[in-house]
Length: 345
Image (cartoon, rainbow, N blue to C red; front, top):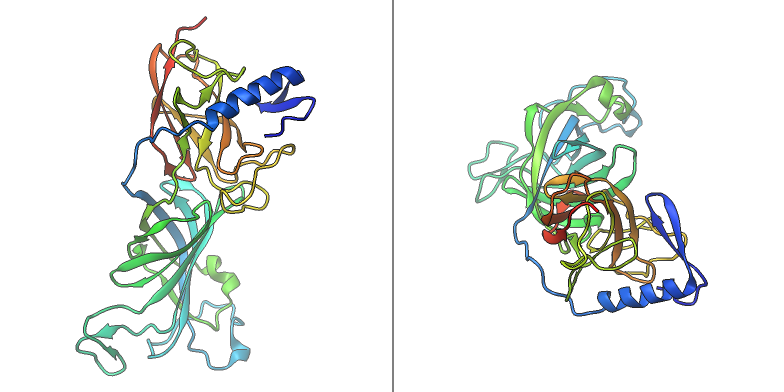
């Protein structure tokens, strides 16, 4: 954080709050002391993150057209011929929802052959020690409904499931696996002579798959020796002696929220900038006593590399006592913490 500026500007609910140089310096020194203190180890979550991904308009394009001048030219639909050994192909489908939440995206997988492996093969099948489908290589490109790019998950495998081989953006560092695609409507099988621009017009299969993912980092409220790093608007920490109040705007110092705009560098790779502040790219939600709350700000804390600032408002009907706070960043939930809430002043 920069201490030499004459004024410190903080974003709150879309407006800018200004303080004097002295006040800003005192607040920054106070906050830096808290953030640099030894971190209290929080809850360790070993359970996987479960993502159910829904896909529509799935078409399997078999590459059994030998004349390259005819590839993608027929308005179609053009049904594929029988399965032929050593023929490669491509599956394409639209990602339409994750855990029931509407999204956009493309799921595609390529394979070097469609012919299965068999212990007792028929003519034209591959012999092997186990019955298994062809090996495929998947890519899941995921976007928010407004078109914001969220991330990529890549995997490969066969009949027993697919293991994660690479990730990008919000999913950086994830490991895990997913099951085979379960189809409620079978995929349409076409040849590569069909114009792929007509895929949605002609339609295709519909189904879903389930990912079990293990994040390298989960979103969390930063911890300090005085408790969770949750602050009032004057940057005094929320404590039993200074509790949150119903309807009050609070500031959270968080970790594990993923890349920030515009470059989407891997978290921790670069320091977050001062003005203009860098917004977290993916969606972030604060869960307060089980209720989803709007986040008015989600930015990388200037000068830091893995600390973020979130602003939210305590519900006006919050009751006095200990309240539970949990963060969710791009479908990845973090551990819960508790803060004291007092009565309305």
